[in-house]
Image (cartoon, rainbow over all chains, first blue to last red; front, side, top):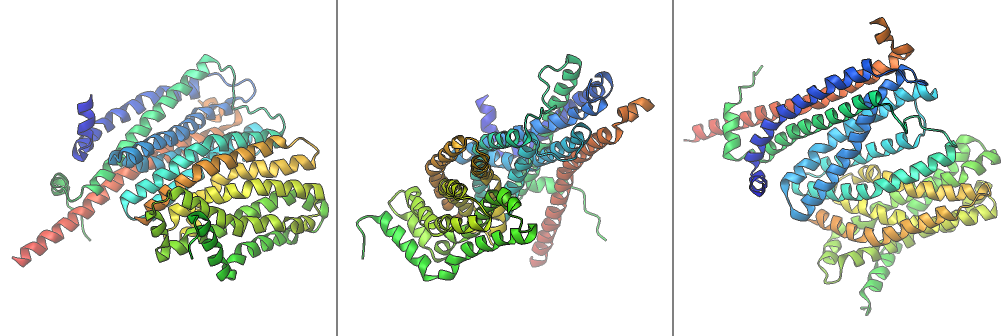
Amino acid sequence: MWNFIYKLASPKYFYDMAGKLVPWFGGLFVLLVLPGLYGGLVLAPADYQQGDSFRIIYVHVPSAWMSMFVYVFMAVNAAIGLIWRIKLSDIMVSSSAPIGAAFTFLALVTGSLWGKPMWGTYWVWDARLTSELILLFLYLGFIALQTAIEDKRLAARAGAILVLVGVVNIPIIHYSVEWWNTLHQGPTVTKLDKPSIHISMLIPLLLMALAFQFYFFANLLMRARCEVLEREKHSTWVEALIDKHPEAKHG
Amino acid sequence: MTDSNPYIALLKRDLLLAFRSPGQLLNPVLFYLLVLILFPLGIGPESRILQIIGPGIIWVAALLATLLALDTLFRGDFLDGSLEMLALSPRPFALLVAVKIAAHWLLTGLPLLLLTPLLGTFFSLSGHTIGILMLTLLLGTPVLSLIGAIGAALTVGIRGGGALLALVILPLYIPVLIFAAGAVDASVSGLPFSGQLYFLASLLVLAVTLAPPAVAAALRISLN
Amino acid sequence: MVEFLAMGGYAFFVWSSYGLSLLVLALTFIWPVLQKRRLLQKLKQAHQRKSQLARRQQ
């Protein structure tokens, strides 16, 4: 296994390896999302109180889970990149951020669309939605910082510090927003929290969550490969790839 | 003239330099005052409403004024090379940085704090409320300076880093805002607010211990 | 079928959510595909320019 990890240090090896993994992860995504969608949209019975609008849960909750998972994933890689100066970790951090932001955005929008039938308004300063909104800004701030610094190595290290500061803050932010919300909203029960969810409703949710995981890793590897190409553009194996690439059609 | 204590020397130097350009010094304070005056003008002079929104708005304005002031924290020294000298010093960079942040707070956070009675009057706040507000500012503005310093350190080398700084730092400011404004609101409603104050105090302790090393690391990156 | 599409009256909310999810995931997927293509094209052009220059200098 250590041999495998050593080999990953070679950009070419990573590029080829990732290239082989992407279709597998993509395939698993499709394999999981189809039954997940079918289970969520068709098989699961309509909710007693919310009717069919509760089905939004099957895209909202996986998006929200992924938005948090990706940030933690970024933080772990940021720490590894900072401590052991591993370039691949840096690449993982910068490639994850846009995907995490996309999930956060989705969680917000689907949450908002769920809020209208549930609470009567498109936006409520619900603890979860508010925390997600702040998380979106954490992602955007990170992306903005990275793109503003030209030197990739410095950009990676600065970004890593920002992510680590952010990850320490996330529980604090979450707690403070929850406290703030219960204080100002009174005992509003968030119907997003189902203490006992029926198994026929739960299984599609887990399928969708797992599907989104594989989507993330597939997309991550695709983006990481691009990054590797860019960084290694002067190496011989990339030049060989360039030669094989079809000519661009000029006007 | 050299002081036996280099930290005091650095503190004195920063304060002295700041007083040499009083315009730069007054900017955040004037901004703070102006922003706060805008609210009654925009919302209406009814004192009942002002009393309700007052503490929250004063806190948001303090946040924004601190953000504005953060630009001057490292930029001057970054541009003329003194920051690099500090980084090369045998003294722990994190401690030197902590001194700089302390100087910065004395120049920006403290004036905001001292202006609060005046502003409290503008918003028809009671003396008791003003007192609690000042206590939250006393605990909270150093946290703002410390967390803000991390952002300032990360963006000091970037052209046009001011807007980027705001985007990066404001999410991190939110817990401070929530608990500070929450404490004041609770006191106004006659509810217990010591919990919020303890939370602010613990944020302060956390910031004082964790921020300077993070700032030092960020500065080393920006100095490369 | 009609019942399925109607989603108990919540059709707009449910289908907008799923539609948007599909859109965002599709865009997020497409981006690195386009990025790689653009990068390789750009590198190819630069490569060709360099070899043309080298040929001319010989």
